[in-house]
Image (cartoon, rainbow, N blue to C red):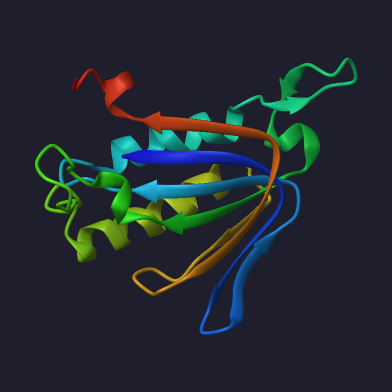
Length: 153
């Protein structure tokens, strides 16, 4: 499972001109699911994101988590994170999980964030053409891949 985690002052997602999810301070998370992913990867990634400490403390150091600052998470499904670009110039998406499985793990991941204590979890509309507005804070962007923790690489 792959995620691009961006610290934001605000983020929202729209489908057909209507906002379907929005947060203030927190993380915008672009989530990609590969065929080998299971609930184990979703559990690990949700726990890491919930505990990630990249918000500034009183001394200006990145030392605070979502719960410390009362932040939210906006989760957007992003199969293009799983693109294979080894050959040619046109990406292949055969390395992304099948839509049915990806959606199941996407929904599971969203629930796991809530289970980890994240008070506000919003999300996009799986599989739809979405417009995402992100007000990066910093910017701070962290790329996470569960393979690094589960020794798949």
